[in-house]
Image 1 (tube, rainbow, N blue to C red):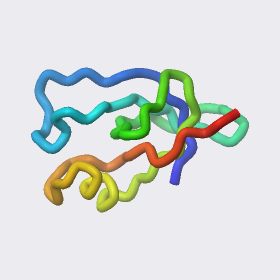
Image 2: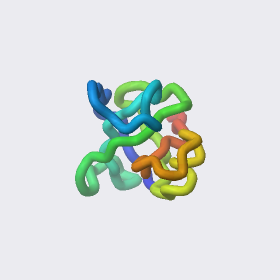
Image 3: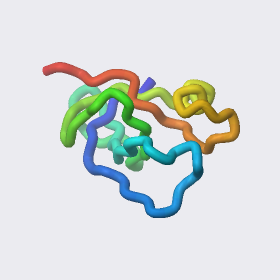
Length: 85
């Protein structure tokens, strides 16, 4: 599980069929203190997270693929929680 901040939206005209209709967000992993940690990641958002919100991500590919109902999906990261302040 990763702590991250939503830093943008992803718009793709061409994407895997399992990602059609999915909201994709660019999430910057960060430390508990809010410092950036590594490169931004693309995550599926089914919870309605907003720009600049802190979120929990899972990197479990099995969970991601089950969320999009396709065991051959390239999905890896999914937002599993939106943190309150």
